[in-house]
Image 1 (cartoon, rainbow, N blue to C red):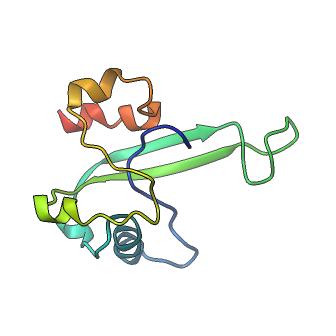
Image 2 (cartoon, rainbow, N blue to C red):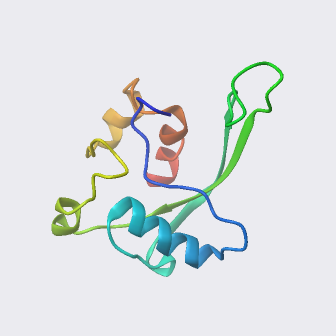
Length: 116
């Protein structure tokens, strides 16, 4: 996903509840803690990658993520205060443009159906 536009997110840690993971990830990715109850569940998605932390050779295992996709509505002032330690840039995409732009990762484009 590096080099492509992707939505904020991350992994759930071992023994971490969904609510705790949501709080931690929103703080890390968006700069403040948001509650999972304030977000709308878009759905469950699967992301498959042919590389992994063990390398990208044929012998290395592939990576399979199960994604719980949520939508948060942020205010303009919250959007202006997004942290830059996790990401080089942020961009607001019109849904139509996001659906056809090659630099928007295919896994991100998959969420569009739930947003319409």
